Every structure is written in structure tokens, then in C-alpha cells.
Image (cartoon, rainbow, N blue to C red; front, side, top):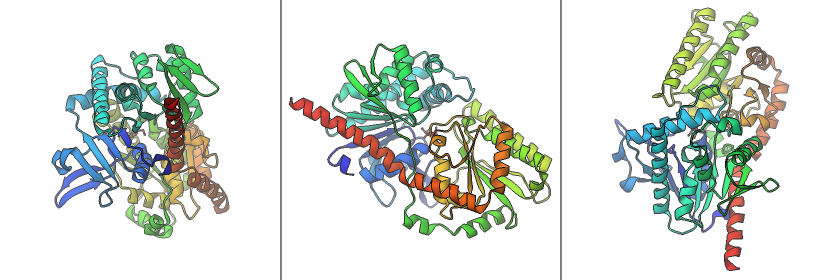
Length: 487
Ligand code: F6P
């Protein structure tokens, strides 16, 4: 709060932090499955201001307050949520097309070919301009602090800079940044880089992504790069390129007090699936996305059962897969493939009253996920590539009993901060199967040692640390500007 006293804060993201829907007994408010929302929402509650987002999930415009503005969180009214409604054509080109068929596979090395269409690019530019205009309209001072979130808005920083030259623009890229060769296939690479360099600060999860970005600029733009200070000067503007590893809000004692005890969670979940108290459970919680390594995980479960038949009938893997971007063919065929593989494994190893894999392809609210995390022996995160991944941090935060084993992909940004996890290469089925076996057999004392250390680090490097560092760097830049203006 101190850093922001007196400053106007505006957040821009595609995904809205709350979804308002009409239900049979009035308006229902939901939280979307999004790492971005998990991280930015608590920060916004702490500093208030305005969050501008695409009203993607809230299909019923009329349940939102007048002027497309609503105070959130419901019942607490801590900040304004301002929605922009996109036309179906805009949503198709901007969100599904350029963002998720182009930039998403371009930045994630998951071996899905990016698709670039001129029409999608045009929609992307137009929608970025609409959001830039909304930021300008919301600004009540000439130097607001604007927090631009993610790859949907690469052009926004330069567009805002044009209208509000004194704004402090802090852009955070929530997904990886690839090497210059990979990024170079984008037909509009120059425009994207120029758009991003309108930022005062450009944040990535890891130093490695910063390095890739700086090398990409070096390759494709005429810009001055100061490697020592990690700054890029382009058209008289300086951008600091820095790593800010994102995290979660550490649960408060008040929240933890609302959780059922671990043994109750264990019993509830096992009863729900028809198992006894000694049944072993591993969980995976993801958006239903091809970057998350869900297929590789299923192969590892299958291999475990093949290699160690003692687990057949005694161990199940529960995969929560929140439907995501399902109008894209790539996502639909991926979801079908996962269904088929699940059925095949269940046919091969299942029996009356026993399924090795439970695929729950639906959205789960936070409380339901907490129960699952607390009930499981193992949480499996096997992303093929991930900017950070917050599921692993949520799992650790849920385990105040200090038990449970985390299996974590070396290709998730989080692997750099969580070496106490069993770190795996998700492409190596044998290694992942062995990690499952190791996790299932791990003595409680070793689990405690690893989990206590993981918890201490996530508690300390929580989301306020992430936002605080970025805002403090932004604050320093504002101060420098003010001093210069006086000279
Ligand atoms: O964290 C990366 C991210 O792409 C966010 O930008 C996004 O909100 C989240 O994953 C979920 O994706 P989507 O908003 O497309 O459902």
C-alpha cells in the first residue's frame, strides 16, 4: 500500500477476475481458472483502483452494474471491475486467433505449430487499441500506474505511452519468452517488440526469459541495450527488463481455519470415489491445455502400474482439467485424445469399483481444489513448458500437515525455486513413473523435511513480494522522472 499511496492504479488483462452469471435464484459469481487471476487479484484488493478486463465469461451483460462497472470482490467492494465487451469477431481474431493460436504456441515450446493469420492480427491490433482507449478514459491523472498483463496485450504499452507519456507502465508477461530464432517466425515480430518497449518495466518470471527477450530485441530492432542494467533504450524511452517470479497469496490463519482437517479431506475424497482409507491418490490440476503435459502424466501412471503391479487396485490418479479455449480444434482434439487414453488405461488396469485414472473435465472452485490437495499423497505438475505454474505453490500452501509429495516438471519456471520437489523431465516416461513410485514410497520424515522447506519458501516469496518488487522498481522510476522534471 505504501508504494502506491496517492497513485492511481489501473490493471488490464484479458481474463476477468470474477464471472457474473444469471442463476435460478439471482446472480452467481465465480472465479475463473487462471494463474494470472490467482496472482493479481490479491494485489488489486490491497491497492484498489480499476481492473479493465474482457467480459468473456460474464455473458449476461445486464447482470453487471451500470456503465459495465461493478465493485468486487462481492460483498467487500475493494476495487472497480470495468468490463469491455468484445464482438464475436473480435474475440475470435484477438483471443482465439492471434493470442492463442499464434502467440501461445510461439512462446511455449510444446511442439504445436503457431498459426498466424492477417485477419487475426488486425483484430488483435484493434482490440489492443480499444483497451488502450479504455485506459486513457479511466485515467484521472496524467501519470497513472498501469499494470498490463500478458501476451494478449503486447501492443498496449506503446499505445498507452502515446496518449499518456508520463504513465508508469508495468507490463508482466505471464508465459515464457522463446529464443530469437523461434520468435522470429512471427510475421509481426517487429511490431510486437516495439509495442512491448512502450513499458517502463517489462517483467518475466525468470532471468532466462529476460535474456531471451533482450536477445530477440538485439536481433530484430535497432535499440540500445545496456546489459549491465538490463535496460533497453528505444525511441528515447527506456525499458527495464527484469525477472519477477510470480507466486500466490499465502493463506491467512482465518482462511486455514475454514479448511476441513486433512484426515476429513482424505476420507471425503476417498469415499466420493468409492475407495477405502488406505487407497493412495495422486492429483493433477490444470486447465485442459496441451502445454500442461497431461498426456505424458497419464503415460507415467500407466508405466507405474505396468512396472509395479502392487499399485494396481491401491492407487488412483485424479486429473482435474478445467475446460479451456475449447472452440479451438487443437484443444478439442487434445481433450478427445486425453479421454481416449484415460479409457484405455482404465480398461487395461481397472476392475469392479476401481479406476486407475479419474478424469474430471470440469471447473472446480477453490475450496474443492483445497480438499483434493489435502487428500492426496502426491501432486503432479508435468508442464511441457510453463512460465511459472502456480498449482505447485497452491498444493504446498494447502499442506499445513507438512505431508505430501510434489512432482514438478523441470520446464516450469517454478522448478528453479522448488528444488525440494521431485524434479522430472515430463518427456521421460520412465523417469516420471519412477518419481511416482518414489513419492508413493517416501517416508513421512522425508516428506516433512521437503514440504517444510517448500512451504517456508512459498510463504516468504508470496505474491505480495512479486508485486511489491515490481511496484517498488516502478516507484523508483517515477521518482527519477519527477526529479528530472524539476531540473
Ligand atoms: O497464466 C497464463 C494464462 O494464459 C493467463 O493469461 C490466463 O488468464 C490463463 O493462463 C488462463 O487462460 P485463459 O484466460 O485463456 O483461459
